[in-house]
Length: 200
Image (cartoon, rainbow, N blue to C red; front, side, top):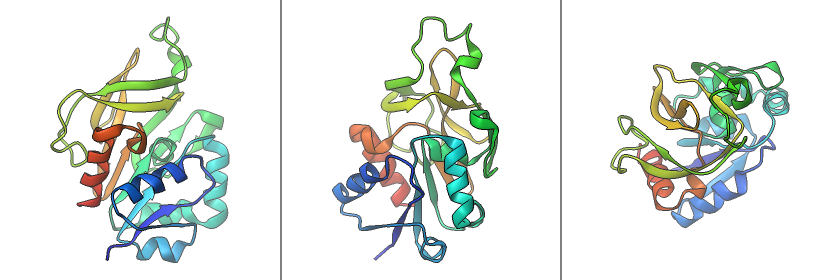
């Protein structure tokens, strides 16, 4: 049976990810142990919270270097996506650089965000289905978001969302995949994303 490791680094939404996997009859191990993560068939890197403190926790366990070196499929979720990028303006935090993309706060684009609430919270459309994660999912399907920072669109972007500006809501590079939305909270469409990842 395939082993799915969910990375434990004290970032918020891990339990909901584990429950979503249970609904798919997937046994997952919740762990911060580098060797267990390296041996896993697939790795999910979730997260909700502050980028600066999250990176400190990753560095304390050595996971900041373990995760970029993984060869199996890896899925980053929400803060996980942002920490897989090069840099975030949240506490001027250097990310893991898996995706050569910057992350910044919506408020930095005040003119575009006029009249829109920050953080971006609730259901929104994801446009684009050229990558693996969105395969078979109808164009312009809705997913659930909760975030104040966004990743710029780059060559690794396979799905975008419009919230005053266009940002990366899905990113893929080699064996690394990431969503800004929460698939574990996104109903049937989110379940389809998780199934696509687990089928890799």
